[in-house]
Length: 239
Image 1 (cartoon, rainbow, N blue to C red):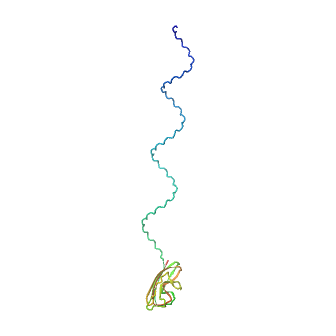
Image 2: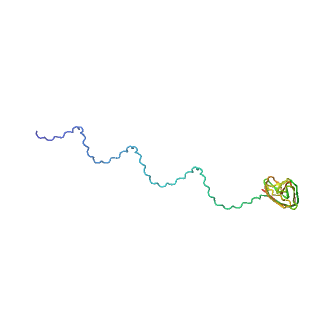
Image 3: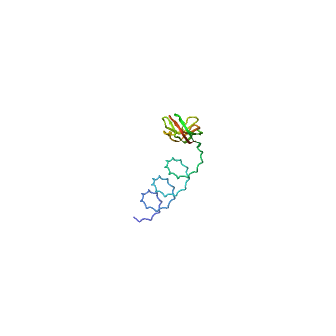
């Protein structure tokens, strides 16, 4: 064969042949410049709840709030123990003088000689008496007195020589009777002796009017004769 001749002129580019198989991956190229910021992506699903964080530091005290409305009254509590006694206070000023409770006062004082009392006479006044006025029902007659009787010629006629005495009262011409509950002081030795009978009684009176008051004696089934008789006392009416 003879020598090769000179190269001919470049012909037109032919049609692209089919792609060859991919070559091996080349080395990573240098990072290119950052592109412009893309639009925000869609929100992803919520992640799982994280653990509770530690308590933060206490904040500063806030300003005082407005006073709230009054709440409902609570139930009454149990009674407390009694407290100690307080100190004694000063004595108060004296009050005004009240009205007197005295209504009437009277007395009797006298004697009699040669007095004779028949048997079964009941209660009889011995010597002088006095009058007091009860002005309203419920007032009180208080009386005290003595009667002394006897003497050398004092005599008891009969088997009963016991004599009882005290304060009696009556209204009008009624028979006298004991004032209150006198205890009938008595003796069985009246004859030929001096005997003194004291009495002090008080009773509430439920009938207004004038009342005769004095010392009296009870004459039983023996008559009595006294040589001397002396009686003194007083009576007063109080509200």
